[in-house]
Amino acid sequence: MKKLISIFENEVTGRLSSKRVFGAIGFITYMVMCYAFDKCIEQVGYISAGLLGLGLTENLINKFKTK
Image (tube, rainbow, N blue to C red):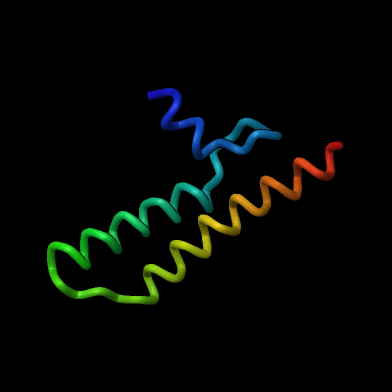
């Protein structure tokens, strides 16, 4: 369980990244909506992917700043 939570943590501060958490929740919701209800709302997918990408990009930028 700790490994799963560590995916969403910021490596520099060790705190949970809200962008990654909400991006993952949104992406899972998007996948369930597409599969179960046959109704894909593309904006949910775009926003979720953007949040995940932004969180990971921010992590990479912070890594280069500390070096």
